[in-house]
Length: 121
Image (cartoon, rainbow, N blue to C red; front, side, top):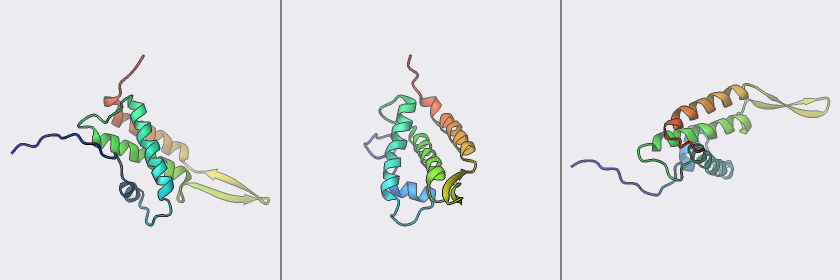
């Protein structure tokens, strides 16, 4: 028997896959993660100018969306490289290597998705 590709409507990412990727236990962040899943899927689809994931590219799109979510989580999640410090009674935020991660994330997402990107003029 030969294997064949069968296209079906299914979510690109599940909340469980995202939580496993980010090593999150519990359900406290589920609402925020569901929003980020929708935003990440929309972002990768818009980046490629496609309405459906090309057959055979499911893994690339999934990983690109996971990288997008991970980048957001690192910037504003609980273990984010973003910490609050009290200075003279006011709170200020200090960012550590967020710009570096964002640049790496953008480059990696581009490398994964550029072969599937439809350029429009």
